[in-house]
Image (cartoon, rainbow over all chains, first blue to last red):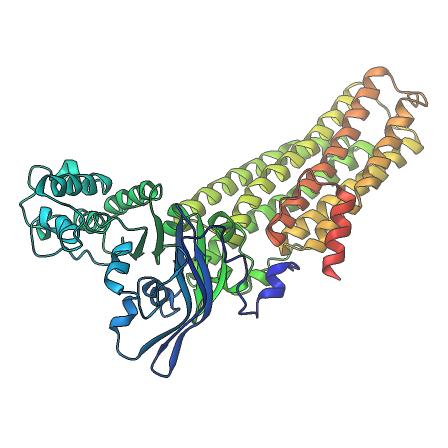
Amino acid sequence: MRSGELARSQESRETVGDYSVPDARMRCRDVEVWYGDKRAIHGVSLDLGRNEVLSMIGPSGCGKSTFLRCLNRMNDTIDGCRVSGSIQLDGEEIYDRALDPVPLRARVGMVFQKPNPFPKSIYENVAYGPRIHGLTNNKTELDALVETSLRKAGLWDEVKDRLDAPGTGLSGGQQQRLCIARTIAVSPEVILMDEPCSALDPIATAIIEELIDELRANYSIAIVTHSMQQAARVSQRTAYFHLGDLIEVGETNQIFTNPQHRLTEDYITGRFG
Amino acid sequence: MTEPTTQAPADLARGHTVSRYDQELAKLRGIILEMGEHVVEQIQGAVSALVSHEGSQAFRVLDREPQIDFLALDADEEVFRVIARRQPTAIDLRIVLALSKIAGDVERAGDKAARIARQTIELDALGRGEELLSARLREALGALDACACCMFEHSINGVARFDVRVALDVFEREPALYEASHAVRALLGDEGQEGLSARQTVCVLTCAHALERIGNHAANVAEQVIYVAEGQDVRFRNREILIETLRHRML
């Protein structure tokens, strides 16, 4: 039947497609992650371009979230977790012993699956990061930064009259946008999103997806999602992970219309497992 | 006609996790294959009516034409349903898009068979008589019919298995189709009208043109078979280079 690349590549675990992009914001090479004796990521190389949304898809346990968490050293907090290989942010090795992970996590922000606002006011949720990182000099500047961040997150008009209300009192979708505003407030270069819409209804999901598209103008975004349609809608490139291997990476249009690896095709067409 | 198979192509042998999805795609493909079978019968019936002076058969062809139209509507409905419910991707998306286009080509091939039947009825109305078509004209039309019909059957068999080899066979028959079509036109144009009146000549030329178009529809179907199997849109590509490239890859 199919006599081309797909047939030839069905048994291979070599990454199909070009994992590199010119002038990458983040450059990962031969990344391996171990949890004790168990190797969770097998020598993955993948770039994150500037002003692009890169989606990472794959079945549960494939390593996509583990890989995402390597990008801002979130795995450092897990006992027994070791990361090897090279991960660079603008040419700087992020696993360099001399590098402080705290400012790194401001440069590479993260939005999680479940909205997790601080048990503080809407204003304080956004102001907290800039304050501890010393990004503003006075209250006026801080107010302006809070407003800008909430505007970028598409939340300002909905909360401008109740900035002192608790962040936890917002709806799920609003809480997630508050978390995005909190991330934006510390001027990141990269935003990591780990299934940011999985706890949201379709309307809230659509608003977040619209926001992701707008944020791309200023940030590089890597998103892990279980929703194939979401990956197809929001990203410019898609990476498919399987059992710790990066199986295929390519333009999202190509991945969803004509994937070159059998495993990718099986997964996105619902033939997996 | 070779019995169309409903066996899944190799790439689709591993079913979806949601088995109903497989059933929906199989149903869509089944409708197209059924349309293809009907169209082949229609072509054979119409050409037989034309060359064998069986006028009543031409009316039967026209009577059966709506069946194909109804199946085309069924195919469209299934396409909408699958897209709405499953949001197909990758090979599934290509299958649905290709089958939608194939349904159009098969339906139009059925229209051509009906056109031949209508021309046959008109020839009868003009009082064509038993020996209106000369032996060599009947032979030339028979050769064109054989070529067009064979291409069409092959293309439908290609759909049954999404088989690139069968699709390439269709392409390889295109020169013979044009040669046979040219032979008919030569008999009626360059070498005189074989004793036919101008109006009778137009009727026969219309039939010949319809047969050539059936072959073209078969080639369009074959292009879609390759699109599904290879993920390449091969429309408007040089046929010779395409055949050579794909044959080489299959070695």
